[in-house]
Amino acid sequence: MESTVLLQLLPSFGVNANLHSVEPIGAGLIHGTYVVRNQHGKPAYILQHLNKGVFRVPEDIAWNLGRMQAFLSERGSDYFIPFPLQTSAGEDYLIHEGNYFRLSPFVPDSHAVSVCTSPSQAFEAASQFGSFTAAFTGFDATTLRQTIPRFHDLLFRWEQFGEAANHGDPARIRETSADIKWLAEREDIVRTYASMIHDPSCRLRVTHHDTKISNVLFDPNEKGICVIDLDTVMPGYHVSDLGDMYRTYLSPASEEETDLDQVVVRSEYLEAIREGYLIRMHALLTPREVELVDYAGSFMIYMQALRFLTDHLNRDIYYGARYEGHNLMRARNQIQLLQAYERSISSR
Ligand code: GN1
Ligand code: MG
Image (cartoon, rainbow, N blue to C red; front, side, top):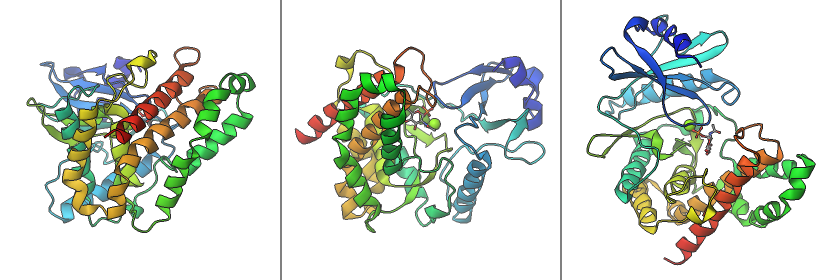
């Protein structure tokens, strides 16, 4: 979206448009994210244009954030989250020509990184996401709304995959029969999930559901400050947050890498994630949940492979594609990562 258009939105949040500038920041696939700088060029706010196709009821996000904020303040907790600001009219969003926008304070002296480049960064991030769930101990997670219904429900992703593999683009189904077969043969990962959700010793907790490294803010000494991007905070299982860290920090090459030889698992990072998360969460997890710590990686990598291949078969309607076969490439990248992950786990 044009920065001149975006600037016009600032006064609704009580911010002087003449004294600020707006430019895109970050690389998320879903929302449009912009940094708002003051007249000295210092970052002051983060402006986001919400993807309404994905978050169908943006009010549910605001409702969740309100509940979480209330919980922390009732408890007198000093746990820090940069919650979005209200508009001058007291609304949680600005609705402009049918589009939803929100403004959050920029956390001073913070920066985000797009790639995890050291085990200590992985450790810091994992302990931030562990602290996040831990901060909401005693909060009934099931009272949160599902901002994306069945988001990390592997049974649902499995169903969508089966649907696409049977009724998706016929040429794409033919060309990817080996990938479809490979994923279908790993149904054991779906079965473990099914048993987990029926096991009372696996608990629903306040779960972030998007634990990539760019959703952690770091201070100038590379210590974690807080987590951001709370749109997908919903009731969930620990395997979601832990698993997405494995999925996105372990390999030096991201899901966009097309040279699959670059997709490898850095074992020091594996230990750093586990330790960072457990340092905050171990006391809260049940013995069964601790047993599932390694499963977390298989669960999330596999689910992402399913989602990318499903989208390819559905002609890229969800993630979009910048080149022909983009989502197929992403799916193969994740299959490669899953194989490397499982080798790494079993050779420990
Ligand atoms: C989407 O836009 P981003 O990068 O935050 C997706 C995640 C996927 C990820 C894969 C709402 O997240 O679930 O893991 O892409 N978020 C949504 O890159 O679908
Ligand atoms: Mg996100």
